[in-house]
Length: 216
Image (cartoon, rainbow, N blue to C red; front, side, top):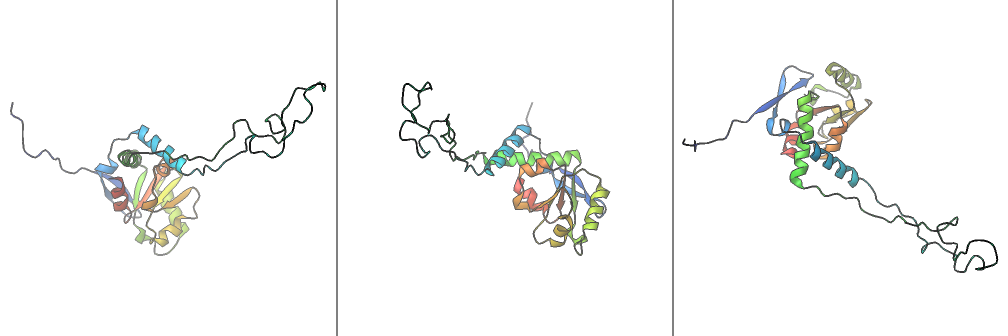
C-alpha cells in the first residue's frame, strides 16, 4: 500500500479558558496548555527549584576546630574514671561534633528540555482541571481590592491563587496583593513550584503570550 508522502502537519489545535470580568473564552496554545502531564518531571523540577533556594551555609565545629583541650583533663590511671585525652572530644560539653556540618551546595541540575516539559505539564494540569482563567487588566481602572475579591468569588475556585501579570499592570497587581493566599508574579518569575502550590491560576491577557513563549 502506497504511503502518503504529502504534508503530514495537522492544523494547530487550541484549548479554551474562561475570561473573567468579561464574556466568552480565550484561546490557548495546545502545545503548552494541552501537553501531556508528566508528574515525574514536575517533581524533579520542584525539587531543583527548592534546592536552589537553600543557602547551604550551615556549619559546625569538629574536634579539630574547638579551642582548648591541649592537655589531658586528668591523669590516665588512679581516678576511677574512663581515660580521656582531650576535652575537645564529642562526649564533653563544648566539644566538637563527631560528623561536623560543612557548607555545601544543594544545586540540582535539570536539563532545559526537561524543565520546559515540567513547566508545560504544570500549566496543562491547570487547564485540564479547569483551574485556569484569563483576565483583562484594563478592567481595573484603579486599584480595588473589593473588585479583585468579587472577581475571585465569582470564579469560585479554591485558593491559594497565583496571579501572573506584567509589572506595568500596576492597578491589577495592587488590587490582588492584599487578598489572602494570593501570590502575584511576573512571567519571568514563573516557576513550576508556584504552579504546583497554586490551586488556581489567573493570567492577564498581556502576560499570556509571554507565559506560552516561556514554556515552548
